[in-house]
Length: 450
Image (tube, rainbow, N blue to C red; front, top):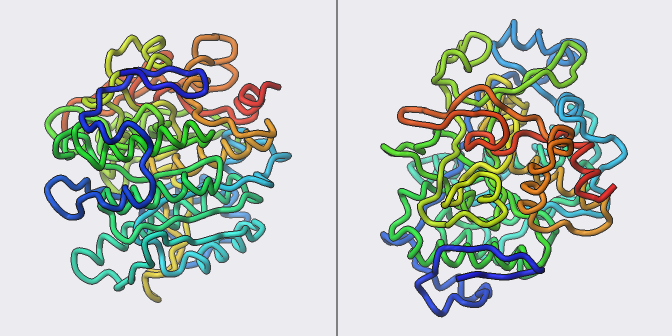
């Protein structure tokens, strides 16, 4: 069938449950099965390594070679990413709200954000923490559930600190689900959309389509798709990470990560970002530590991960994408961003106890989703209105050679085969890095019609 909104028509895989023909409210979503074989279990455990309990001197931290020489990792801070991706200083996200959806949350996120802000000279934002289905109890990492909670708490810190780093004057609404099952996260997402908390929403989590029982017939997947359609109709831009385990996501054959594979979501793949001595953009390659030619700085800690990016087995290619890619099925990623732990951003964690608290080198495609959301908040500020679903416009830019060259860094080196087959980067669109990473100032001008 074809679904329409705002004059844009996209072909989607046919949904098998007639009752899902209209967007379901919070109460309906909450009735989805929990913990049974039909449940989607989402994961969020961004790759990272301990860096230091407190930041080195400003002089050392401003010299990227210092971190490479002393730790084997780069250590990008907010100013470094702003310079590398040319994020305009006159846009701060003022008047905008970034919605971040996570499970479990972090018991110290308020304090950790304050520590991060103090270290990098950022203003304190308005951070609202919302628990639509009740606040979960953090048990300190004990047992299987506890370990899962720690991974999500780390994700929460990454999402909040780095969306704030890109759009420091934007309000952050952190919406927390009590578990990582599909029904719980659907409730959180539906709450955010029903209440239109903000015009951008980031979801740094996923489940391989190969792991979703019933594939496109899975009720929780269908309900999530309805939420993303409703978000698009409401003018909300939605972002999700493409995955950190290569094209196969841990399975024998390539398969896309959901919700990144949904056509109403912008999927973010991962790169290794390199800068010149003056901090300006130098270039990027596909993030894939398993390829010796791609793993930076001697790969001193070994293989950590690789970007996702693969065709969907659930969703047909929407017209905005098939025109550019020639694919019959929806493919991820749509865009790219820095994701390697070796070209890391710094994140503060304060819930791991005296011996574990401190700054960490963080990577993963879940680094890119909240930053793309924040970039879009800057674009909304510049435009003076919500831009909504970005994918049609992004793929339209790709069809204009001059605009594309100005707005995107086309990543052409590398592939995402990781413990299995993968896909090669190349000129224009490719699955590991989509259309490429943003030249933010130029892209915002294009999106805002300037």
